[in-house]
Amino acid sequence: MIFDPITVCNLELQNRFVRSATHEFMAEEDGTPTSRLGDLYEELAKNEVGLIITGYSYIFPGGQSDIYQQGIYDDRFIEPYRKITKRVHRYRSKIVLQLVHGGRQANLSKEYPVPMAPSEVKDGHSAVVPREMTEQEILEVIEAFTKAAVRAKKAGFDGVQLHCAHGFLLSNFISPYTNRRTDRWGGSVENRARIITEIVRRIKEETGNSFPVLVKLNATDGFQPCCSKAKLGLDIFQAVEIAKLLEKAGVCAIEVSGGIGEAGGVTIRTAINAPAKEAYFRDCSKAIKNAVNIPVILVGGIRSLSVINHLLENGYADLISMSRAFISEPDIILKFKSGEVKKARCVSCNLCFDSEGISCNFQFE
Image (cartoon, rainbow, N blue to C red; front, side, top):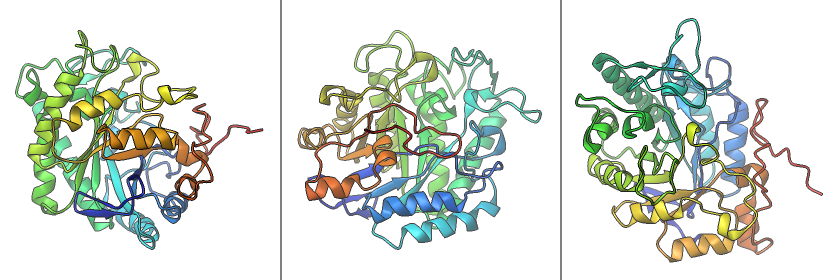
């Protein structure tokens, strides 16, 4: 099943494997994409990754949240990205550009000394207190995401993914923990999701209905277990309602993830050394899949072919998304396919998150 072709967002994918977006630390200081990124994505395409989602690309300078992060805030990035998409399209893989604004997790600088967020809620991880965005700033962010998507289409990407997870700006809006507004951008689930549905609407207006818009969605902030009724932050019950709103708005696939920095150790877990520890957002994914009619992608420590088959056969997801496993073994799909291995070698040590460029730095015996 995992090796069977599937149509997602009008894209014909050769299999159900997705490379989940990962910050590669391979752009120039100003966000310009480099040939190193092209090398990485082309290698994934050579090794038959059905859908490649790039590392997060910030939509304007004040939204950058890490060093050597790629950007898409200016037209001058179109041509470097076009060189990359052409390399990927020599093969059968599709490639989608992930769009992000760092929100309360954005880098601080002289030009942007205080990050902006829906509300002034102190970041328990960094101790930074963001300033509350004005109505005009919200509208400007919507347009910045829209322009970024237009650039992505011109650069040859097969679609875009809005990063609405992991404590960045769009996930700040959907969570009642970080969004305490009382205007049309806060309060109800519909109001908190409004910035995303408006971004989708504007992208559709500017790129056409056929240009795919995907979403990476937090199903939980991570303060409580995924499927408990959370007393703090976003819970699965709200996430299901948000997923329905996104489908209605025109989002064509949802990748289910979870966690923000304050919750600690939720998003990128270590020591995934047993099948029971894999796919740690599986229950969230199943709840969302049961509520929508668009493809659902599941990410989170997936390593074993047996687990992958179980997830697909039992309705947890339509596609399987991995990141660290591909860093360690870009050819893991071919190894699975040939029967050479039944499990990725990745030990989830997180040593691959290297500021000189992601790479597997674990010393295997």
